[in-house]
Image (tube, rainbow, N blue to C red; front, side, top):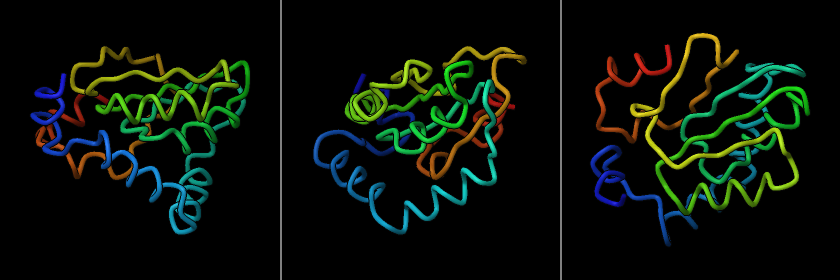
Length: 137
């Protein structure tokens, strides 16, 4: 899995790097940005939202709260450490589901999600824009 993770992203968000990213995600600046992104997303109760590159799950948690028990928030991330943190951060939200993987290999159908969100994810990927966006468009 590590070889695939590095091949797909060029970066390895596990171990110490995962911890650094989690501290950054919890910072005031990232909290402000998360609030603005969530306002733009405007996820409503009952909607189904995919977050690509969910990291430690702070945004995913807020999405899960917004969609409520009749919606779903699905996160995908390349890092097992980040997915573990996301699962811990969202443990009390049964509408949140988190997966280790690359969106390029994730099977999506046209009607599965109302919205797809990715913040700071594509910029760390070696996958071409065309290939990456064709997975989520």
